[in-house]
Length: 152
Image (cartoon, rainbow, N blue to C red):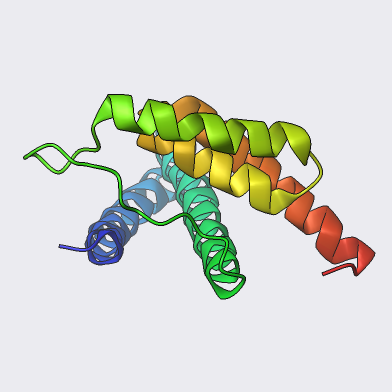
């Protein structure tokens, strides 16, 4: 199943959870008992933090997807031709060898979001999700700056 479908399913379940949480929180808040009011505020606050995190992640995914489409239009999106294990995972050694060219590209062109996006994909293929995410955030920042300056 595609990740987008899983996201929709999780969002639907989360919406049901939010409805139930808000309903419980409201009951506690309107009860008038000081402890119940505090509990109601906490019950209301935790799902709101979850909503904020969820919206941030959806925004990250949508922006990443838009950037990938832009790279594809520019014929700069790396071809996914690395060898894979029977499980579907990329062979680590091949990804590590492929990674070098994208690292050098980002070092040679540190102000281009395209280089950082490609580096993020290489980090991800190598299994380094933390650095992949950091590189993608940097690519997003550069793209936003480029867009604001009107050079795109």
